[in-house]
Image 1 (spheres, rainbow, N blue to C red):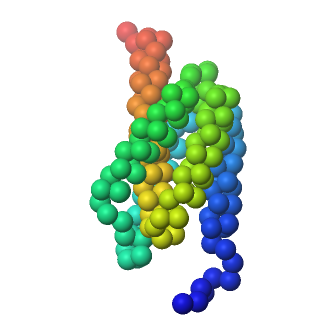
Image 2: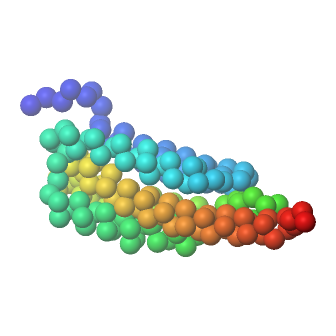
Image 3: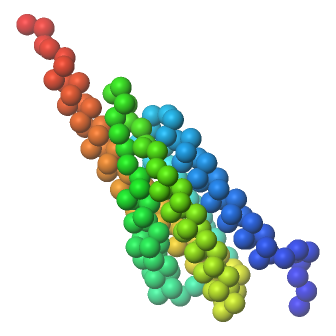
Length: 172
């Protein structure tokens, strides 16, 4: 059976992984220069969740047990290092993401591990199943990481609100 794509799909997938990882690192570095808000934290997992539509295409179907393991692996092995290295701080009454050299380093280690794992797994299952599996792995990383960031953000936002209430004296 012939391929309808005249180029090596594996090379394209690997290139896209590298581009996406580099883009994420650049965006993270830029994010430390501007104050953040809840929308900036919560929109990525909401936007990414639309990718679950890929599973409407039958060749991407994987067993539920694989999906659960991929999600758990994303939570445990990928999200935890990102949660640990993502911290906020207050500057002039606004919340900023702290710069972290460790974050970029960890991000590239995770990207390298993901590429190696991707190459190994795609030898055993189809490229479409691999795509589905790694989408769930990435979502398992992104969702808990962003939820942890949101909790930290809310804590600092509440701290700012309570401090501003203390500094405003009632007119009596």
